[in-house]
Image 1 (cartoon, rainbow, N blue to C red):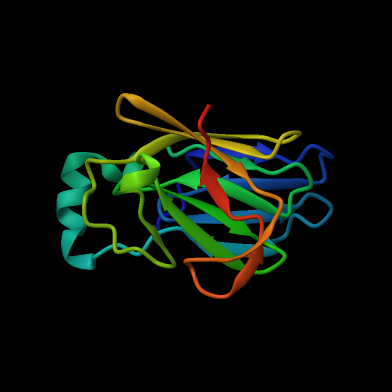
Image 2: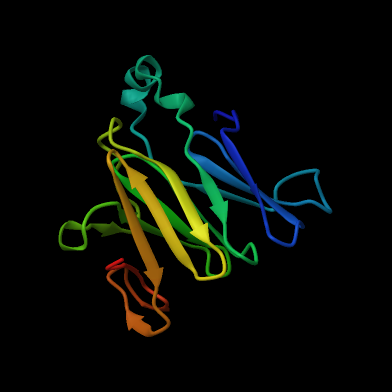
Length: 166
């Protein structure tokens, strides 16, 4: 596994740290630094494409990572224009493709096929619970709705992420 850290973010309280590596995230409690308390895979990559990824520079892509207000989750970009929101309380990954709402795909574990299309820049407005994702020449804004809804990802969850009209 590649352990090169490409980004990091502190929780607002300063107690937690999330670090981003090539295809994973580690969540740290700064009171116990011996090992991360959680490791999360962000994308499944085809091992047959490893050589191509090395020559194209994908292994050192600087995907940004940002944790939410109380460090119970994070958002990070990945390949094929997807970004991932992780809910640490539920242990669930939510992948959303950075596209217009009418052309948007959601998946529980997308197969990353297009390594040249990526969401390198994400941010999470911690006070308003708004996520932004930048891909190519576009910035997409997603706001968490405060309703209980049946999700396309399977099961019921509170606060589906939807693209904002802003």
